[in-house]
Length: 265
Ligand SMILES: *[C@@H]1O[C@H](CO)[C@@H](O)[C@H](O)[C@H]1NC(C)=O
Ligand SMILES: *[C@@H]1O[C@H](CO)[C@@H](O)[C@H](O)[C@H]1NC(C)=O
Image 1 (cartoon, rainbow, N blue to C red):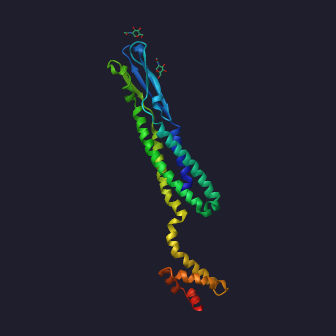
Image 2: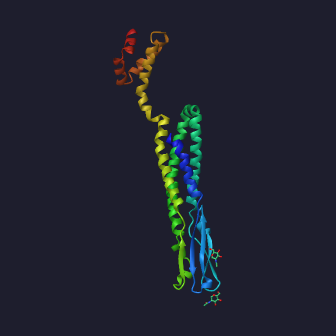
Image 3: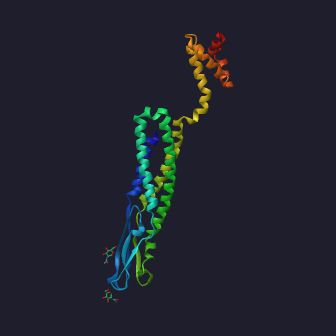
């Protein structure tokens, strides 16, 4: 049941911290000729991190000329994949919660609910792992590409030691780091839930049921036994079940009910 509460919440955290991101860095280029300097060059970027499309102008420190630059790299595919997985995981876990709580009968019908739930949970666990890993790699690319020291290397003015180039501030990455952490937390949550959904399917107990089911039929035969003719017909069933294995034989010996019933025949 913890899945019911945490899965939608964790998914929201994952896509909100990544998909809602916008950040920036500030550089200063102090030219020998002060009139050409720009001490606050702002470079803003945001989700989905198509950094090669983020352009900005910097002084060349050679007259009025400006140099047009762009950041490097493109992490949009991993970022968008991550957010897409998170959004769909959110929608699915919300829908599954509603079905599980309000349509319990429909959920159990023909075991279809648990079956679908199991398959979807396995798929989402896999997607969370792939998405989080890809986005972790994408984020490390973003960090390098938006590192002020790396951006300064692109500027021709900064190749002249007489001009002073400095990083004023770096982008704040804490929410993106959080999104990666939540991505892997979601993976753990969904992967851990595989076991609980698997139990719902009843597959794990099918081997045990083979032994326990005859016992249940013993007692029901016993309850009805002697009261009506039909029970004699089903006693044939009892004989077959008794021959299934030693465990049901043991049961027959231990309880006097079915044993005395066979004696009557
Ligand atoms: C400095 O660069 C910013 C862009 O980052 C620009 O908006 C501003 O006008 C520039 N300032 C000067 C003095 O050129
Ligand atoms: C500084 O730049 C201005 C305008 O670009 C120019 O008029 C001036 O001559 C330059 N001064 C020096 C020392 O280069």
